[in-house]
Amino acid sequence: MASVLIVSEIQKGSLRESSYELASFAQKLAGASGRDVKSLVLGSGAQGEAEALAARGGGEVYLVDGELFANYTADAVQKAVHAAIEKSGADVVLFSNTPSGWDVAPRVAAALDAAYVSDAFDLDAEGDQLVFLRRVFNGKLDARMLPSVPVVATMQPGATAPFEGSSDGSVSPLDVAVSADECGTKFVEVKTAEAGGVDLSKADIIVSGGRSLGGPEKFEEVIRPLAEALGGAVGASRPVVDAGWMPHEYQVGSSGQIVSPKLYLACGISGAIQHLVGMKGSNFIIAINKDADAPIFEVADVGVVADLFEVCPALTSAVTEAKG
Image 1 (cartoon, rainbow, N blue to C red):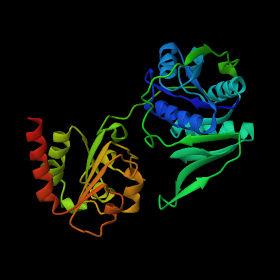
Image 2 (image 1 turned 90 degrees about the horizontal axis):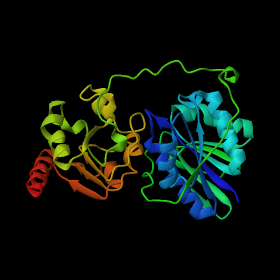
Image 3 (image 1 turned 30 degrees about the horizontal axis):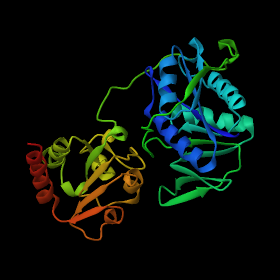
């Protein structure tokens, strides 16, 4: 039987959350097409991470464990992926659309002479035909990609919720014959940028402010108190970041972070297409804007046509009182 292969990533000793998002996509495809789910875990001393993935949607997990795989090198990863494809018989291979995914996925596709889809945000099967959805023209349109198999695809991080169920997967070792001398590249070091802001892709609740706030001080007076009352994170639109009111790491949109929280509050954001691309996958959207014709209301579950300087403080007080 054909299968779908998840190529997971380990970062700082733990599986990236995007690997469990791939498990959600793989399980969805398995249910629609009857494929088995297989996974690949690469690392050094990664038995525990492989078992964790097997228990959360990873299916049968192939573990390639060795010092060469402690850090990313494209040549070694590519050989391991090919070994896993041969072992599993996979005709669908899923990577996260991360820097390492961008690097190795096209190499795998080219070597297999396979179809390639990049940065997809959803997938499905219609009979025997696979369907991948990706955004084009800066998010103005959603394109339906209908590739032949085999196909290699990178999936957009944050486009779906991580797999939260339990599964009866298994872990088996996979031997990959590759040495450091065979690799055209070698790992040198990891340089970590100074931490700042919040990883909005992992936030369950985001309260974002737009240019209508009028100045940076209003984020501290209006937006942040509401976010803290709700136990959420602060976000911002691109005009706010361009004006220097908030750092870039707070920007939601096509040139910022793509988010899909359980609750997204857009305060004083008109809803330019670049912003909608970054947040319209949210589970529930509340928009507050004085302009009843603002595009943000087209994607909102609840729209409040009112002055945000009246609504947000009142909402903050109501949430704080409700929490006791």
